[in-house]
Length: 462
Ligand code: SF4
Ligand code: SF4
Image 1 (cartoon, rainbow, N blue to C red):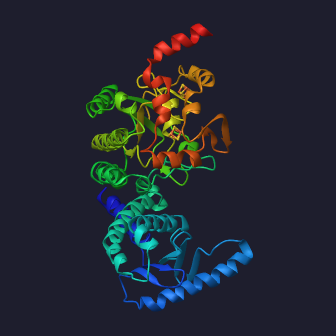
Image 2 (cartoon, rainbow, N blue to C red):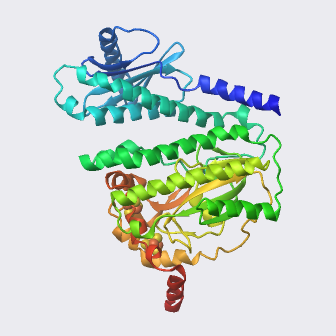
């Protein structure tokens, strides 16, 4: 046991050592003037390198535009890659040097985050820029802090997709070609339209909750090292009861059990066990009615925080009893929890794409636990008792009419990964610019009225 743990840990560490490392980072303007540099291992004449990189980018732009009609994104020299992100509004290049082995997707994530932060912080200085680069010096601390945070998250996540580590999880479920992509939320984007007062509130009241959720996402990956090498697969009824009681004591309102299929795992993710416990936590009914509002935004972030924490505690509880576990956090999730909850018999999906449950309507957040326990009391109903909601939604359409972004469609959008009524490209701007929006939850009849009452009325009218 000890040797296997040591081996896993050393592979884990090796993987961390090999993953994303920012070797150098520059921000230069289109004239080649450097505004910022990060270069931990060598001292650079930035005034020389700035012009050089700008020239490369201009040259490469011409070459690549001829062939593909696009900007150059990456230039590989030896074992290193230089990756460019172009900001056309402020006429800047963000350039990141790293190992050529690092995936483009990860590099872009870093570059976009740095770009967002820099523009947000220095928008005024950029507009009034007269060649003085001293205001940008203060970006140093913020950059290093964000880089550290991104790096630790990224490396831990990457470790969970490392085949060498994963090989002990024989029943793990990998995503497939039908798996949905995870929508990535960028907290910094919420700031764009906030006034100064709300910005201060965002930093003091929302970010600590978001940070706690992110730490819990880290914990959910980190604690995988504690999984037993030969976990138990059968649990007694008493143990399941004990687990449920513990979950209630952590604030979980309801849970359900189901089996996982690959099309419910997010693209490029892995869930280590196919046996799923879905956890539901209610969002406050009265506060939802105030949305879009700062108050509602704060409450939702708090719900995520509590749910992520509870999922990790429950995973630890399972491990203490020699069962394997992976906490699937609510924020930074690993799969399609709404469909998992539906399959577990907890409710049905409304036109707004959210779970509608008898207990809370659409007012809940979901997390999961994947476990080695094979005899969970899985929902085996052939017909979901809540499927009547589909007909109700077809007649209702309130969320479609009330959505301020016109992001919910009457006719579903058919994708190869399934179908949805939501157009994320229209929802996200509303979501970022109006405190997480949530109008579709507020306006849904199931937010306000009792499930049984609506069901009765619906069938009376039929
Ligand atoms: S969050 Fe807002 S914009 Fe997005 S679907 Fe719901 S109501 Fe529409
Ligand atoms: S508002 Fe109406 S259509 Fe939209 S999810 Fe709720 S019940 Fe369904």
